[in-house]
Length: 159
Picture 1 (cartoon, helix red, strand yellow):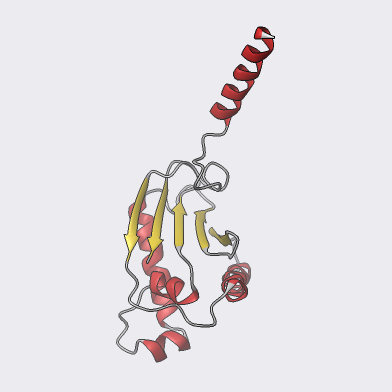
Picture 2 (cartoon, rainbow, N blue to C red):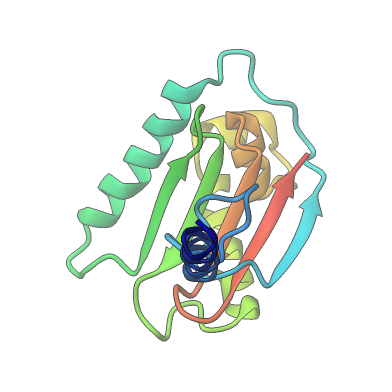
């Protein structure tokens, strides 16, 4: 009996070592490496009343379709996870795209420029103050994780 308990303990320990993801983030270690940094973003907008899982998935699908229409392979993967698709994930698909957090922030700035060109942003923010993170807040996303897909993952809580 004692040997059986020791064996079960050993198996449990090995299992814990093989799956280092935190309990509160089941995507860590699967879609991106361990979270290396976090921040909180205070959105300048309120979530639209009719923003729900369907709208968030539609947005992600639209982004993916736009990436597929390019003459070259997608450079990033953007998708939603969570019970209500409330967690956005942006992962570089090559080693040069978001190799540092600074480059990831530059990508977010490019996405901001694209978002500002949309009719909804022009109507809601004619002065161009809102960011891509504000667009995610409008849609009801609560979190964005960006990663180079290799060495870091930065998580932004959207409030």
